[in-house]
Amino acid sequence: MPKQSPIADDLDRPFWEAANNDRLVVQNCSSCNRLQHPPQPTCQECGSAANLGWREMSGRGTIYSYGVVYDTPVAVMQPDQPYNLAVIQLEEAPEINMYSHLPGSPVDDVTIGSKVEVVFEVTAGNGQKVPEWRVVG
Image (cartoon, rainbow, N blue to C red):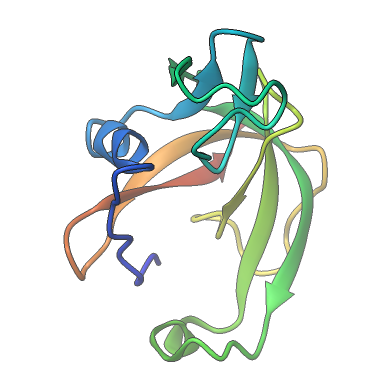
């Protein structure tokens, strides 16, 4: 399903490099132990820039919310309409939300609160892997 290929910059390059190795990482501030996503140049809690690193996540989470996209303005996504778009809360950091098309889940057959696990799908444009989530259990 992923058609859009992200292009890494200096700030998010570690995230995308980890994804290419089938690993999910989130920016972490070692000063205040805050996890944040998307990555920022400074910690949004304590303002530190020098103490930002990356922490590997388990890749487990929960569906917080979802919707079905019937009419996207993104041309490369239009052939896949309709499709799910879910908000995923990470198990280790429920304050962090990530998005997924829920590959393998039929449109509108989604239960809020379902457990999910990360999978990595290759984008066609540049081969960059992106995290998606599949319902488990």
